[in-house]
Image (cartoon, rainbow, N blue to C red; front, side, top):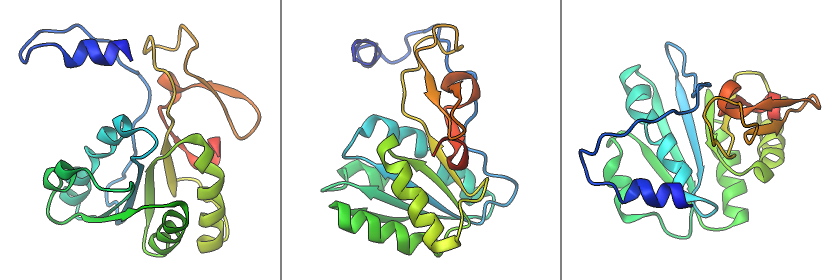
Length: 182
């Protein structure tokens, strides 16, 4: 989009005044345990950057990290940007993606996902198969939506909730519990 292009064109060191989302990021807790990071790189690679800030924090808290990416080919620089302790897996198609998630859920104590909204149902279904129900706090999803003003005033970030209501992603998210939005 035009805003991203403008930002990418700024010279390093340029001072910017920015107002970002005032909501919530991924909650890892004191001891995160085994954390599965899910990223759909094929759908929109821009959002992946938000997940890449998590491995260092998880490892610092003595957790373990497995990153599963849906992509025909992993970006060349992705693995080199990650700590060596991060296990990286790629799924090339829908069948591989589904099976890899199912396998990884058996290991994971929690999941942080950057997937399009259309995958919430699949993710919920796979969690139920592995754990019998979608427990609050087990899967957190980064909701991909427009975060125009960063304060919720413009209402561009409004998303539906699982209970049938609406909420503003830049105020109450952009990370939500899957049980709340799935």
